[in-house]
Image: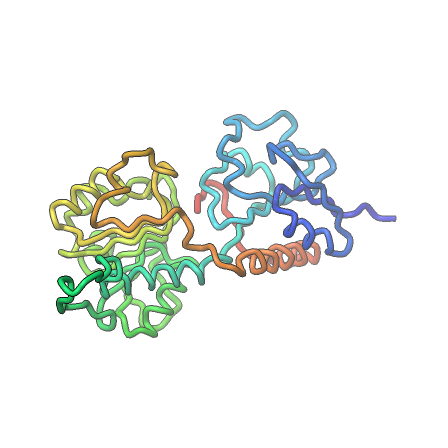
Length: 312
């Protein structure tokens, strides 16, 4: 009798149940320290957040007999470089992108229609005000993976102009204009969406110098990683009027310490890293994980392959 394909998993029970139901597979749940996998494990399924305290040096014997690591989240920037001793690492690309795109569009509407203003609670506040339009505005997208592409598709349905910047600057989507560089993207955008991976090159990419390139009144939306932004430079740009607002679903650190000015700044809309969370999130993740597992067992190409040295 052939040996079953053994999966070590630090995922939640619902995901483990879905994986364990795949024919020919045996699942071993992990309680803590997901890098300490059983010696007979062929694959490791894990969450990025569980690796924040991973050791800087690989455990003795790593990568054991692992042939594949599947990360349930889209990002892999918290993982140590030594995980790439495993021949194949994949991530949960695209699972949360539709929900995050909805969040971005919601943030744009909230900004233009001033939904974050004070609620009217009496006749004395009953005053007309000019609201912003959405159609005809330009949304800039920094990073054009699954999230950026979903934002672009939705924005164009709303008759927004879309300008984007990526590593290749090639966009297989009609209507997307390419920005020359980040400064050009900031000059052209009414709403700028940060959807790029966190790497050595993108860490702190939105700093005091770059913010000087912003179109006056720019609304900045960050759904990627807080480390892309210099917090002090952002606050200065908001205070000076260079930026009209910032919608932040991510911060550095997370959570921010009590008393941090971003909690109370009148031009900041802060949410606790929830843009990708919807009621069907677990179902969509299960479908991706099971599909990738089936493709691996059949020797087919997998979704979300991570090149060594790349953060997302």
